[in-house]
View: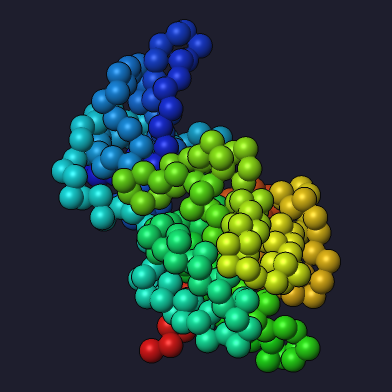
Length: 309
């Protein structure tokens, strides 16, 4: 078979006989990801992640999973890349503007200054960055989509529980992943290509708290409010196993952590079940406790974000 695909990941390896081969993950024209191999192949810099390629291949079954064996590969025209990059259905610039407007409407001037200042300093990357390398919202514009979803859920939660400090919660929701623009590196596709040195050594939770501390000092913000937001960012992964140095210790921090996990889980389930037919089970999803998932066919696939239009 012949087709076009985009290389998402690529590594050069040796088989047991010492022959070189390429081990890849490619995105097909159906936007699905497939493991692929090119046996007895020395790359020598010819191909790299983020490129669109034209291939001839056979489809194999390896340990119960579909795998492509590529028998011919060559570069495709550069302008084809737009057909293969998964992206948010919402324009990142529009989502950013909506969130910035929410922050500008805060009555608490300290939260307003902190959030808007950090957002504007990182605007260019925030508008287009994915939210992850491999997991939830790992798509162009995914960071703004994930953030907006949590903000909307947070606002609905505040309607049910009026004792919540709305502006504290919304501030934490807007800023919770802001340092992913520091943590991740992107390729020409706009997708994450790996982690920066600082991302590996520090991570987005700690760096986000550092953004808040530095900005609060710069603007003369009430230290108590800054510390509350720092704690929300540091604790939003919930437990040490997932990277949080502390667990949530007040209501708004607990809500943020819960909503972050919920939105990620919803995305993962929708993404997995959307690839299979109604009445079928997915393969085990390691990001969801190695569970199989069932497509019952009763869910709507549409994702709504209120842009205030």
